[in-house]
Length: 133
Image 1 (cartoon, helix red, strand yellow):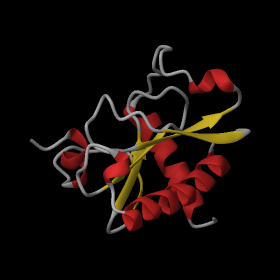
Image 2: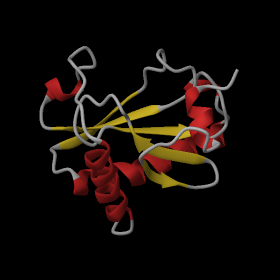
Image 3: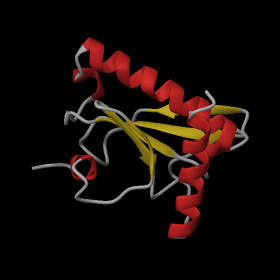
């Protein structure tokens, strides 16, 4: 059965897209722990990050690095943290989270809520910085 992320890749479910190429997709997490919380996925459906072929894994990391630099420019922060959990959606993915302090990386705290307009503005701001990195 296709995951929600596979449905996003196919355009069956909308997302707040940041970046996309032939193999990878970055979009805003709709249950963010910090403003600008981005998910980066391989388009190929696999439930475990370390099951990716070496070239797919390396490509995902390089794609994520580009998104992280744009994210840091768009959402001023000390660093962009990266997490691999993969328990809630069985499709390999990375979380990129702007960090001011370690508490920003707490997945157990209440998730932030934004309007569709706010999500769209955040996504557009990050995407705008991709061309500058």
